[in-house]
Image (cartoon, rainbow, N blue to C red):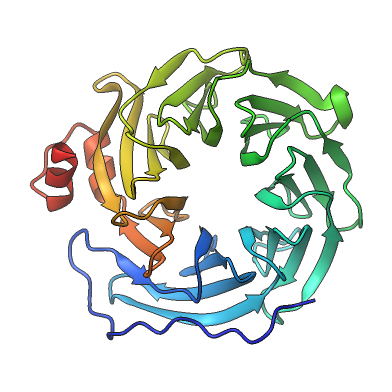
Amino acid sequence: DAPGAYEPYEPPEPPKPLTGQEPLSICTGAHTFDVQFHPREPLVAAATIEGAVELHAFDRDAGTAELRRALPCHGDSCRTARFLREASTSSTSRIATTAADLYAAVWDLETGAHVWKTRMTGKGNALLPLEAERFAVGDDEGGLRVFDTRQKKAVVRWTENADYISDLALGKDAKSLCATSGDGTLAVYDVRKAGTKGLIAMSDFQEDELLSLAIVRDGTKVVCGSQAGTLAIFSWGDFGDMKDRVKGHPLSVDALIKISEEGVLTGSSDGKVRVVSLYSKQLGSAVLGTVAEHGDYPVERLALSPCGGLFASASHNQPAVRLWTTEVAQKLLAGESTDDQAVAAAQEA
């Protein structure tokens, strides 16, 4: 059930040591939908349109990256991949994936074999680990399922959303699952309860597709990226309608990651990564500037390294994955001035 031979893209020039804010560029074998950092090792996973998940080891200071393994996970585009922690140890040797081939699966990183697999009714689009053996998957039909790798079928399922699930995040209580959807709503589910009993809240229709989300301000605010570029902000426990909004993105906000309780990075379809302050005493809520870019290609996904010192961006062009320092973003959030070229570009954007 795996695709055929897989030939990764070869970069045309040898890597060079990096300086300043220059990113480490990683070329993948195909169009890349997702990127994630390994929790402990200098390794990133890239999910591609050919169904593969590529594992790249990197040394950002030296400016080098090496393809360690390409797992032929799915027969159609792999939309997302997330590392799973082992229940009995601190190691991470498995990765969960979902794809347009209607499958969700778990793979052993050492052997490359799948250790768990199930077929779904909709094409997988979003995935979020919940515990060592449990993870949630949202599909193109608006369905949401919680899987336990010790069981073949979903242990919890919901069908309350009317369109694709775009992103998932877990609340501070570790039981409230937030989901944004193409139907223009933010939904919150109790991961312990199935069906309508599991639906904690669903926002009013926001007149726009919601594409991404992050939970900030110590779990009290949920920020959602939209198709029109506005960030919609909801207060925890009061999900009926947005309580605030941040404008400043000319196009859709397809990706969001939290880098502090008062700041997020946004990935937009105009190819830029911006830093946004949220309820900062000094800066308020505003788009502060551009800290990375992929030219004219949309930013599909953002990921933060375990130490918080790097972030990864994934886009359509090659190099598809780029690793950046968070230094400029953190300085902007702190209200510090800098002469770095990235900030100068941000102020002109």
